[in-house]
Length: 220
Image (cartoon, rainbow, N blue to C red; front, side, top):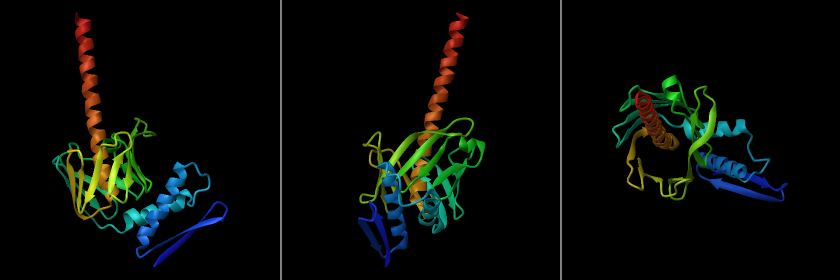
């Protein structure tokens, strides 16, 4: 058995976690630290460096890689080293690097769509400015371990649920299928990335339409 004891409130109270799976213990420690952050507790149980190491252990190191296919005719590969690459359905192809905590594009075409961060409780997608600086979160999904669901905190009807090797929407918006050994947050990030890509397309179309209207007005 793996055991850890966490002391709370100046060691007046303690919380003991026991499990048969060390990786599950790691996941609970990370989640507790994040919830402490959300509740604005100054001295959380982990410092940022230790938390990053635990996220690597829990959500990267033990995964050997595989393929991800979607109902949108997209195909991706994920390697043991954390390289996530599009193989079908996107032009140009884009690729990202996963370290257990952050999903970051490795070239200009990829970083254009933003980056993702996982903290053990929430998946957060950031749209990035041209200079690459991380900005305000664009999308956030909270993880419900009991139901194995990701819930959009802004639109709670938007729920994605794991069922064996499928990640499917509960509102009829498609699914992702994995073959192999891939961290679950990475698969959900692909859905969030897809939303970011589609929103960029809409913004681009709106801008082109606006420019065309301005040109017509000037001609008149």
